[in-house]
Length: 309
Length: 304
Image (cartoon, rainbow over all chains, first blue to last red; front, side):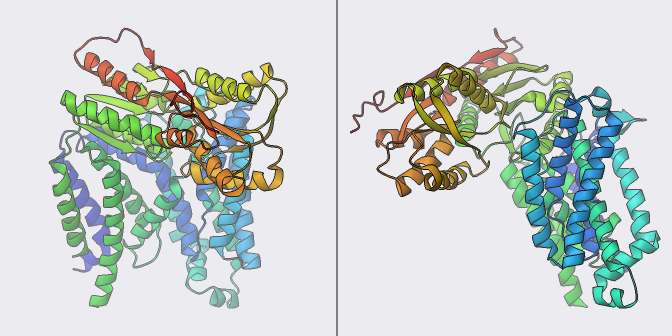
């Protein structure tokens, strides 16, 4: 029973996979499709891992989708100017870190509610993105070498999946195994108490927002590599899904707290549901209905469990 | 316990859908909320029904990453064919190529030619833009100030904008005094608000509104009707959107729309797919559906 309580959401994921496998053994249940799902969830999970860091603080970063779009457009614009891949990646990631740090600074130093600060700053980033792109989808000049960072396989594993594994391991270690990670949980638990015991609250918050934006920037680069094009609103779909993944993850592993493994389970549930329902030929409006119902069910069931205590 | 409840709820929902939605032809688009795209999808679904296909529709609401993933899904599901609506396939070239490599024919409606695409049925967007611009500029007598609603993210709509640029070179006395990148979804309301602002700031200088498609034209009409109903501003758009046609008939400020025959596009696509599924190759890889200008005169209406 304790195991069920602790790993219930993970078991729910397994159950969803099982139902789809029974419904479509040849298409959904094939190994190639299961590997494909890890690729499809990779970018969402990377953005959601960043959002997890901020959620640990008890804050939101609503600018993540704008940073994803910005990173893609900025990279495409720099490629069009003939700049080399490593330089482009560094410049784009540094710009994303700077954007996140500004949001974090506004929240930590001036106590602007993160909801408002990141919404406003996200709008600024969106404007910048449209300015650079002229609102157009950018195709030209994206080198094949860069595209390979977001597609293809390495030793049979899709490259985006490898990025996700790398990011997940690094940020799981950072959050669970380092003093910095424990400080973030402490700040999220009680910011005033954390300040009174001498924790560098402002600095840690700025760093958390900067890391969140860095991961959104990385996802934007990988999205551009995967598609071979950059769209000025290309990151728009990630905001709500990333936070849905974090919330779903909060029902797993650790009661009510955001965690990297939990977020991975949440992202996997979202990706599996989209993939499975598409394979079964379910129209997209019904997919939305089911995805929303599953998220609500997960959160409600957790709360029912608490009431039962 | 919670896993059980969650699983049961999900299984129940699944059971109600799985049996009735076996995929055969997958129709995918990022823009189903657009009236024109929706119309093409509806007509194609009707044709698919008559042909005995089971067409299912996936809309990713402007999200190209999601569109790429959903194409991968239907390739894994080994559908009989993939129909992409209102999207340039080069934006998802890897997925289109993977479908072609898996032997799944890909056709596009209102799309573009690309490797792996067997058939594209569309309108010549540059011609549409030229017809719109020439009509509007002739109405102005070759002289005046226009405002422009555009959306460069859609390659087809961007072609119309390029046609405007070309037409402006032919008409040096026509000036674009303001322009606006339309927000999608929600183009009508976005254009309405923008036009309201323009009317306040430079309403006396605007002679005409050039809209890259009809929804922003309708938004501009709503604003002018509310704030400056007696003005001589004329509006024109593209698509032959039924609401725009009604407004032309009602002698509103919308004086023209270059109608794309979306029903014909969807019908031609269904005909092409019938051939393809029968193992034949379409005579041409790209077919243009005819376009025509709709004005009060062509509708038999005399406006004051």
